[in-house]
Amino acid sequence: MRRDNILRSTSFRLALIFSLMFISAFIITGMIVYQLVRWELQQRQDQTIQETFAVIAAAYGDQDITDLLDTVQTYIKAAGDRQRVFSLVNPSGKVLAGNIPDLKFPQGWSNIDGEEMQLPDDLQYRIFSGAVDGNRLTVGLSRRETENIEAIMLQSFGWASIIVLLLAISGGGLIALRVQRRFGAVRSTMEHVARGNLNARIPIVGRGDDVDLLSHDINDALARLAATVEGMRQVSADIAHDLKSPLNRLKMTIDEALAKQESGQAVIAELEAASAEADRINETFEALLRIAQIEAGARKSRFDILDLGNILQSLADIYSSVAEDNGQQLKSSLDQPGAIILGDRELLTQMYANLIENAIRHCPARTDIVIRSEADAETITTYVEDNGPGIPEQEHGNVFRRLYRLEKSRTSPGSGLGLSLVKAVADLHGARIFMANVEPGLQVKIVFARVDR
Image (cartoon, rainbow, N blue to C red):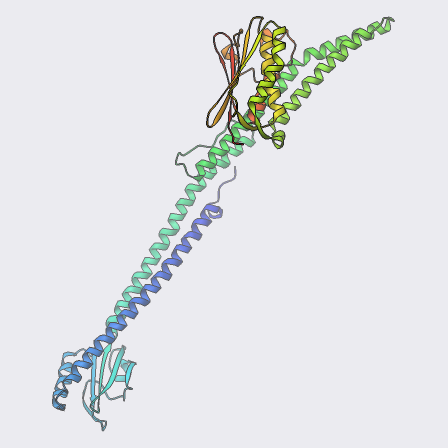
């Protein structure tokens, strides 16, 4: 048996693709969140700068430059670490107050590196510059806090991505391994079957998932295959056993004819007997071929909507006189109308004819034979029953085998294929067939699925 390569298995590849898709979605989502947080931090920083600018500008409410200078100096002293920068320049370009040189900042917003403002830290500053009664007021705030938050977010997101990637791949690998083991059990079973062990079956975990459903289907197919092979083996054995006697009789008849021919005697009787024996052998093989065709489903193309009650009533009318000639009575009790099924009229007629003929042939005189049917909303059930000697219960399953005959029936005409054809026709129509002793007598029940016209 070939060793499974988990890396080349479909389950692992699907798990890997799913993991990569999950990681990609995680990264895309993380980048979107990062950009939204970064934008929010930028908006809040700008809002803080604008509020500070407004507070300082409000100190110039009485046209007093001194109050404005004092306010700027107060903010400069509070920003000892130079995370905040301020500058106040009069209309002539003289710096009145500030903790950064005058760089002739443009009106409005700008981003400036700390090196340009002769600050020791390599930081970027967010700057807002505006006019206060001709004076140019500049307020700036470093991006250290926002950059620290952004760095923490990136680091956290990076570690989270690595953890998620490892978990996704390892989890996908474990899932793929479990699936691979279950499919390995399927492969192992099929290899046993290929080596001739038709009794091998796939173990069912019992979770009811798709693998269990597939295993159930395969096991059912294997069971049918085993039954078919066993049937073929049994048929071969039965043919070898049951046709040996007629072939020996045919050979003895031919040898007798040859002996009479050599002595100049008439051989017409032997030739007629040989011809009759050959006809019986041909009929047996034709019946076997007919059963094989039925079991192969070749006749399903001839299915049509039909009333099963009409078929049974026609057979009851035909065989009632045959039963009377045999000293028996054939009665019918049919639930009509409404016994509508989908089937092949010719095959169904042959099936019920075989059951009726078996009852007539194997039951003694004064036997009552009854054909009846019952219909409900979903099924149609038919019965062919008698009060004759019946069949031993242990033989009920055997009588449907090809060429199988009870010991008491071996002296009577027949090939042992009548009930085999009955079983084949019932299976072709998806019907369930049951055999039971009714003390006295035998009952054969066949249940069909009902259809609407």
